[in-house]
Figure 1: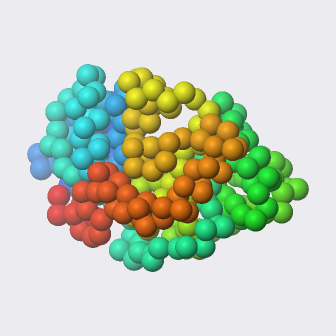
Figure 2: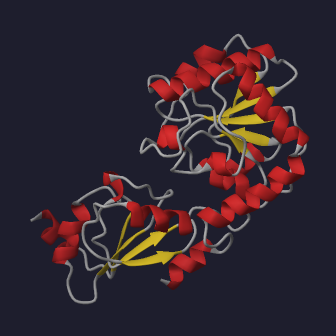
Length: 276
């Protein structure tokens, strides 16, 4: 009934939906009138998951080939749609930086569940211990948009080489003076690579490429297929950082390959969406 109300109350031509894991789209699709269309615009890479199983859209946009492969792997697909690879609609046209060889500056991408999610919390504990043991490095932390930062501020208040960035900074500004990032299971790894910043995974779980668990297999973002294997402790993290520093030209090239796999277009993505 609500879907019917929306389509009658608002004389829209196009309904944009950013929540691909909601069944709302199925009800809305059924109630669309002549010449009304609905379109899904992703805010991140698509996973092989029940939360990415609703395809009741006229058009379903995805970042690129990696998302297409995950959709094909998903045995639970509801509805039908026209799938279109467009890149990300959220990357601005001026999202360009030169590579940065200030190797002592590293950015950690936090997430909204870092204070209680077991893998995320343990990962941060490893990063924190590494930073404390290596004062010659500067660890910058970018908060997740849904994170207030109070827990991280308390955890890092006595460590002088850890700095939590102001949330007003754009992603480009956050990355401007860092050489690499720690971006475990994050879309930010794609955007960092686009700006020539390699990424590392810090995850205290056994690596199993055959596992259906994305934390074990790295089968969501495939960061470890392009950059060093995950670090499970402080010593391994330092080893992985050193490996990137010593082979920086190689990992800059890997950034391009990583972006190519995830994003169909690296510029003018909004134009690609508009063309649809």
